[in-house]
Length: 118
Image 1 (tube, helix red, strand yellow):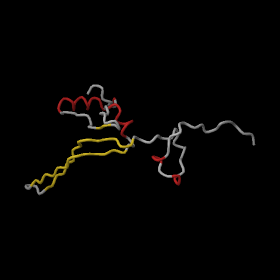
Image 2 (cartoon, rainbow, N blue to C red):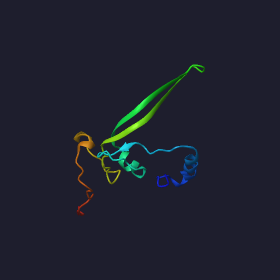
Image 3 (cartoon, rainbow, N blue to C red):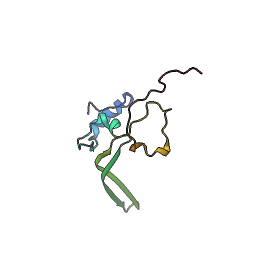
């Protein structure tokens, strides 16, 4: 837990939680079915296509006439890693060319190869 990526402003609350709660890492696995460490959650899961296995629980509290539903994550398996993002938010792709996930990554392109005189 000491190596978990936690923002500086959240560290005191995280340390308090560790005293009173059992904190478990996500059961998240990469394409090779290897456990993804917490420090890599953002880079390997944000924008990825995943298969999720979960348990769904229902509790009926008769005295208050309430229904409580909970979902508990069992496994998260990456099926397709995140797409490469453009190096600049100003670079846009042509939407008519198809889904970005189907296009091969060609690496960084230079905006200008030289200057032209008009």
